[in-house]
Image (cartoon, rainbow, N blue to C red; front, side, top):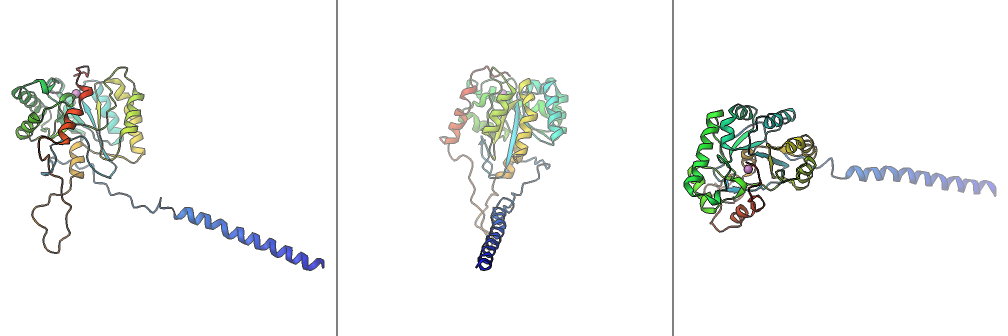
Amino acid sequence: MFLPRLFVLLFCTATMLVAQGASTPLKIEVRRALPVEEEPQPRLPDTAALPRVLPVNRKSVYSRCETTLPLIAITFDDGPDPVLTPRLLDLLKQRGIHATFFLVGKNAAAFPDVVRRIVAEGHEVGNHSWSHPLFTQLGQESVESQLRRTHDAILKACGTAPLLYRPPYGALRVSQRARIEKTFGYPAILWDVDPQDWQHPRSAQKVYDAVHSQTRPGSIILCHDIHETTVAAMPATLDDLTARGYRFATVTQLIAFTTPPEMVGPPAPGSVPQPSIPLADPSPATARDDAVKGGDTKHEKPVHSP
Ligand code: NI
């Protein structure tokens, strides 16, 4: 009686061991089957190539660009500063990151060497007016003079004409925007990420936290390279965004890479259908115009330094 019981016991134990042995690799199989490694990685455009033209079917104003690609643009306003801008350029160079600098014309005229260095190192320069006035309080001639003087100062300093502008405080009337676009060919560039780095009390941590939490694919980040705390925040901020998979583009690149190709006429028979494109603002009374006004309300007080 003892031996048969022993055999039964051994058989049961062996069966349990086999069952356990079989179930363990099954769990691993399930984990390996998770789509983490299998997921196709997005193909990102070459951000080393700097386009010098904007797509013809671009919009008139951008607060961000619509894309699912992890592409973003970081912008620095109100410089160049003779000390802080070169320090920032060192940080960007170490990381191979290209940014967009919205220059104040009188600063560009005062520090042309810094403007030259910005462009020589592959960054984009945009027009941010001559003396940082509130455009909504100016007549059209004054607005155009502000932009013309700055356009010429940037061109004189570095030989490259800006393709974009950002109105000081983001403030702009719809009629002004239309005239500026017609005269200069510039789209208006606003932002969707604002760490309010100009506002007291300033802190590098505040800049880092806001950029970390607000940035998403297609974001345009607003910073100022005239504040020490902003430049101090950049190593951690840029490294955080890079570690999270974001790639930096200049604003012109971001627009070029995210604007669908223009569809001219009906597709040829048998050709692959192209997506229809969102045209530039169809009428003056659109949500985008509200964005022009709404995006700057917090900036309207002239506490934001020049
Ligand atoms: Ni500004």
